[in-house]
Image 1 (cartoon, helix red, strand yellow):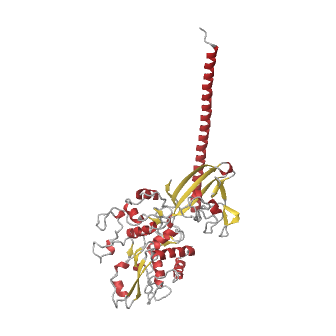
Image 2 (cartoon, one colour):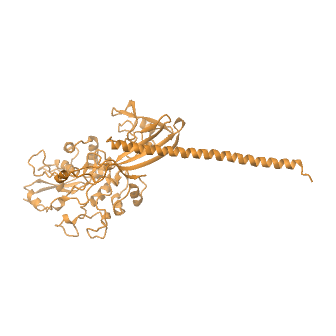
Image 3 (tube, helix red, strand yellow):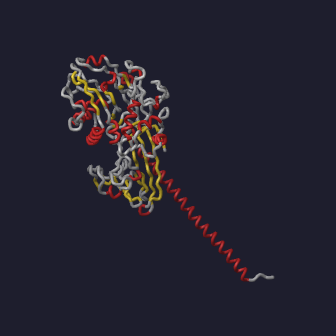
Length: 496
């Protein structure tokens, strides 16, 4: 029998409906694929922008340009005001410079300048662009589409190097703990007067590093009590490869890179303090008698990493200052021994004062600054009626931070005389520097923007690089031999 025409019509309509659904699905898939392709293209553009930023930053550093980073401090006023308050999305309610990510920065490193607008420092303020209706700073842009990159360049020598101290698996003090994880180990060769079980306990750089990191962890912006013990207990032989590895080993998601580093320069020619090796003083003991009972000063075998005092964050300065201690022989004929120590409140006051007075161009200027802090800031440090009094507090700072040993206690020139030098330090941190020591971390963010500043893609890249190598001649032998740096400049350390 011939099928009914109505049934045929229904079949045809059904087939056409299926074809329409398939056609709609094909069109939708084509649109999604096109959109996905565009997103991949935008992501690639953003990544290439970030990589371009890395090259730009490296070229500027290699050319000797100085980098600074202001984070949210757009007008460099030091306060959360004006456009900063309106644009802030990173740390609500307080100005953030050190930990503000580059993607949220209003004042990135090497920022593009707006000559028509001046900041609080009287210099051109950074240009801003709207990104998802939020103001952001940038370093370079590709006109006319507005795609841009922003840089955050950090001086690694402004941070505390967690790879200081012994990094091998030896057990110098015989306590069963490998030295790369032992907070007590020190060279026994410098302590022959002490019994083997006490030799060097708590006096090596490992111990000072653990103590310094503990103070850092107590700071409000770090918030990791017991940081020093955790860092040393988990430290692998040969040291940490990155701060990210350190964070994973100690079990924290907090970004510690604003305060810690694994790659700053290590000074192998600094003196190991030996104030603890002095004999117990008694009445009538002269300074010369004390010196006879001391072990001679020697270089620190494992070296110490200096910290750039002109760029270090406040929390790092506090960590380097708190707990410093030295002996002052204030009367060499009557053996008056005074112990000077920097407690937590004083360390915070000193850090604030140093921040307000930097940058320091020379060590002479730093010494003058320390003297100027007396007695207003360095106060209550066991002032004594005889001898130096609070001047010993200023000399304590000079002895700890100035890498030049300068044993000047018996110098008749009172302008150069020091009540405390490196031979008197019983608790120390590390030396300072007055500029970068060559290693930098360059962080870059690339942005691709659409109409009205809509963010289409954002990618980041980072690079730790040795932009230059230090040539430091500390002896006449170095100078005569014309000793050159061990490593060549601009050697790439890591790329992530």
